Length: 233
Ligand code: ATP
Ligand code: MG
Image 1 (cartoon, rainbow, N blue to C red):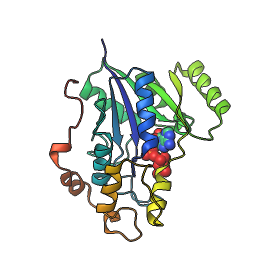
Image 2: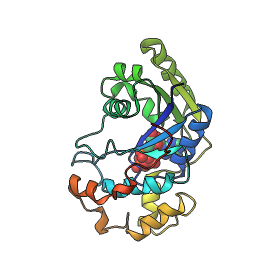
Image 3: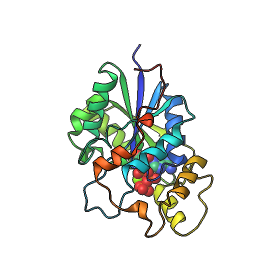
Image 4: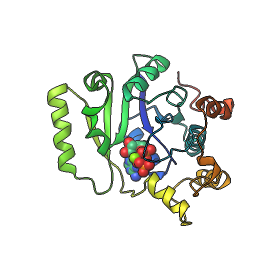
């Protein structure tokens, strides 16, 4: 039987319980054998905010997912330069895990609404199923409409997943750290300690400085580069 693989892309700057609950809920409801968290690479320079170097976002994602035997972290997006288009990510993962497995792209419902603006949407829609997780306060009727349109026009397989209302966002976590508010219980403890130890998200903190890609990739210990269930391909 084909392995059912969930793919959860994100900046994970930092990863928080909203991401983890969504992945676990998707794993359960769609009988996924594995959920791969895929931290994005360093986006092109002129973005509206400075993204934390990939090595930190990668390691926090590893720490957060370590205790779940069905979760693993993939380096496909952080190990290649340039913007990470979802279609390229899925293609690389299909090469790595096999073309006959079943792939489910998990994402927040807000992202799914913009799916047609992604790179090669029609081809992408044929490559995997989509799980649209609703975030707190999300207007459901707009989503239901888009989902049925995508199905009718492109044969897209999009499922809506209602996750318990978790009003957590990485933006809020970063702002909390910057202003000295607590983030305990919003992120796993290991992530909290990692943020403290590396002084992330504090104004003017050195860890926020840009690093060349290669240096960032090198800095991640190789022993952590393939963390995941050992019985899967
Ligand atoms: P930021 O505030 O920096 O945009 P974020 O919290 O949205 O960060 P991302 O890394 O951008 O986190 O999100 C990765 C994926 O997880 C996206 O598909 C996003 O929609 C989804 N997501 C983020 N937070 C939640 C949440 N609380 N519940 C469900 N899904 C979420
Ligand atoms: Mg976001």
